Length: 190
Image 1 (cartoon, rainbow, N blue to C red):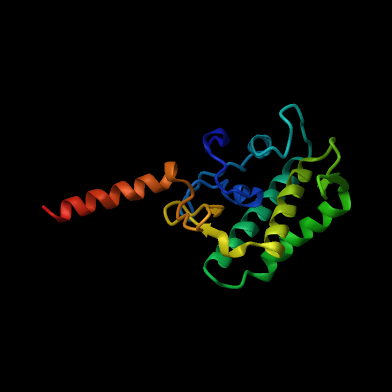
Image 2 (cartoon, rainbow, N blue to C red; image 1 turned 180 degrees about the vertical axis):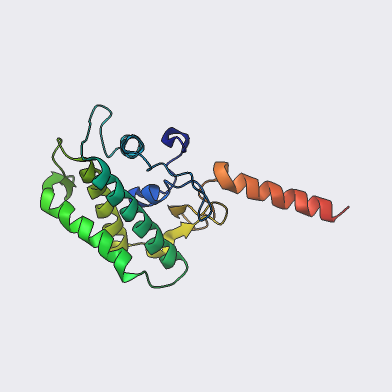
């Protein structure tokens, strides 16, 4: 099992970072959400839970987390491939979002409002901000800026000015691809 602290948050969107809790898609079995400790460690790293917060709720929350993660991944992977997402996957996201909305309160921030959830909460509540992020991205976009790394399968929101991001990150996959291409070109000229 992989250690969640070994990963990076490169998705530029909470729901995409959550989908990226599997090391290399589709063939990897390095899953950071196999235990409650992994889920809570990711939630702290992503800022969903404060470092001192704890959450209870065990196995049900873990299976819900895996179901939501896979639904988010399949939904946005389909969008990247210009296919319609599976309605069942979208339902998982929207059903979790509906629960999140019922439990949230609205707080003024700047010239708008943000959703906030009670401090003391179950492990299942860790999923609420993720579902809110996924619903917002689905409804408001920019869907044309969602990408999937060809090397590792991670999803990302391209926030570059010209929309030219091709990898999860230059450090993780981009430099490896560029290096392989350089050496292939160099060896071809021999």
